[in-house]
Length: 287
Image 1 (cartoon, rainbow, N blue to C red):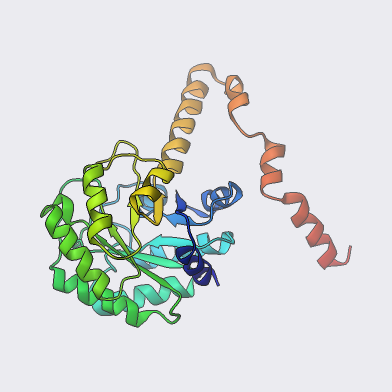
Image 2: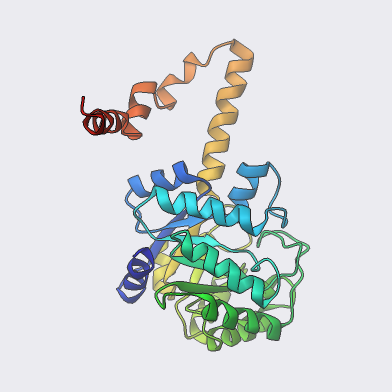
C-alpha cells in the first residue's frame, strides 16, 4: 500500500521532501510534521543503534528489522537505505524481499564495496559498473510488487569523477532502477548536468556542511529533482539539543533553565496518544 502511495507521488507534480529518521519515534515526528514520505538513514541507524559511524558495521538483518519497526509506526511511504545489498546478487534479492515484507516502500542500493562508507565521507571504493547493473537487475527480480521502488545510487563522483558517475547512473537506469541517486555532486552546475543527462526521476541528498550545495526543496525541484532527502537533519538537531541539556545538568545539577526548550511530560504523552490508548484498553477489556 505504501509503495503504491510512493508511486503515485512520483507520478504527480512537485518534489517529494523526505526528512531523515533513525527510529520509529523520529519517523512519527516526520509524519506529524506533515511530510509525504520518510527516509530511513543508514547513517542515523548506525549511530543510534550501535553508537558507531556509518562504515558498514550494521548487518542486513539489523537494518531490515529497523526498517520494519519504522514502517509500522507511520502511515507514510518509508524510503529505506539498503546500503550495497549486503553481498552478491542473491543477497540483494533477499534484502529487497525482507525490506518489502517489512512494509518499506522503496529501497536505496549503492555501488560501494564492503565495508561501505557514508556518501559524504572519504575513503569510498566502488564495485565494477557491471556488478552493480547485475545488482539492480536482482533487485527488480526480487521485489514481489511492481510498485516497490528501486533507487540506485552511485558514489562514483567522489572516486572516479563526474563523468563516470553519469555513465553509471545511466547504466543503472537502463537496468531497471526506478529512481537514480547520484551522490555528492560538488556544484549546482554538476547538479544541473545530472538532470540533463539522466532520464529518470532523480533523488538529491542534502547534508548540512556536506559536499553538495545545500539547496531548498523548491530550488531542487526547479533543477529537475523529484525527491529530496535530509538524512541527518533530525539526528543533528536532536544531538545538539541533548548535548546542551546534559551540559547544563552537569554544571548546575538541574536542567530547569531549559524547560522552555523541551517538551514537558504531559505534552509528550499527548504526542504519544497515551489517553487514546488507555481508552482503547478499557474498551477492549470491557471496563
